[in-house]
Amino acid sequence: MANDIRVSNMVSVMKGSEEFMTALKAVAQAAAIETGDPSFARFMQAMTEVCRDDAKVIFGEVKASMKPPKEAKSKTSRGPVDNTWRGEQKALFTGRGMQWIYVSNDKVFDVILWDDVVTQFFKDAGQAWVRYLGPRIEGDEKMAAFEVRTSGSKIPGGKTIYISHEEIMAGEFTRLEDGKTPAQLGLEETKVASQGEEIEVSSPDEADEVEVSDELLMVEDEAEIDEDLF
Image (tube, rainbow, N blue to C red; front, side, top):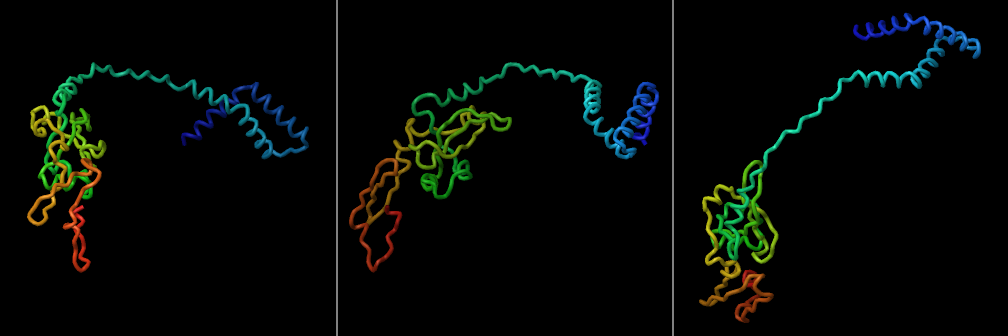
């Protein structure tokens, strides 16, 4: 076996050193006489401990010196990154009233929740409105990021959707009318019908309270009040 050959090779080196063999025999004799313990087994245990303390470090040093030097990894030279597309995309949404666009509901319904403030508005309108955030890289694809403000258009924060850069640059989107915001266009207002009349109720972002006539609060026989009125 390979290990036996390696051990045999070391034995040959040790026995081939007259100086080592003379010293080994002298040390073995001295250890047995001075300790009064002629046990070969304990002598070998002692030899192992001495070698571990004083000889093991030599083997480590030799092993390290035998390793081939590591080749320095050459850094891949990278050319300048072309970010022209980012500026071109941003330019489409620069200026007052240029950030809001309409998108189809299927682009947002995967990221918003059924009880988000804007969900019913989107359903009623048959489309959603989102605000431009900026250029993004998703995977290896150039994209445009848009914010879905789930708590109402006046409240930043919510969910993010992505539309391909190519689609945006091709102009395949519709801005809100007259460059206005959803609030200015009244897109987030609820209209409640009662006795043939329409009462306009502002969205939570438009007013702190909504006045409702006493007629709408009239109930008979403790019938449930339609919470949609509020």
